[in-house]
Image (cartoon, rainbow, N blue to C red; front, side):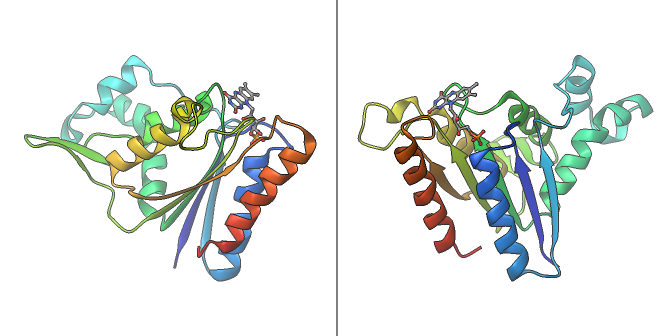
Length: 204
Ligand SMILES: Cc1cc2nc3c(=O)[nH]c(=O)nc-3n(C[C@H](O)[C@H](O)[C@H](O)COP(=O)(O)O)c2cc1C
């Protein structure tokens, strides 16, 4: 049975990124009627920031964890389990201040786990997430950051997500951007229509 991990991160009811991920999830469910969808909206859930106790527990070998450290790691363990169990991952990501919402960063800080999703080795960092998972990122942004323009280098969203997910072994990532969402209504509608067109063409 297939599993889709569906993560949204916009707090807005009228969110464009969440609208696109919802359409993606509906399409995926049609193609995988017996499949399971695990859904979170990081901005609606209290995803904890890393505390000192959590950082200490992250770097304590599993055999030496105290009961209290296991309790501190419980949310991270659950989110890592969800990631490892997923066949397909879809992220809805508003561009905020050229990057991602803090709540999504909080989720990332809990799934990037030494010994579970990546490992330090004498040859450097190696990924521990099994290969073959596909990742789709639907971003919505007020402007546009196309390659070949001076704006491209300001897009710290796609570059960051590609890099951090790639470190875990999630290398098959497709980005679909709904651009111009803060521009004139016609441009915003066209930006959304382009993203919906790209979504329709995806083989999920
Ligand atoms: C706090 C905040 C910061 C934003 N920063 C940017 C930005 O740096 N660049 C940009 O193009 N749009 C920016 N926007 C516009 C959003 O990316 C745009 O409204 C997008 O549609 C939000 O995604 P959502 O519709 O899924 O909530 C920002 C919006 C907010 C609320």
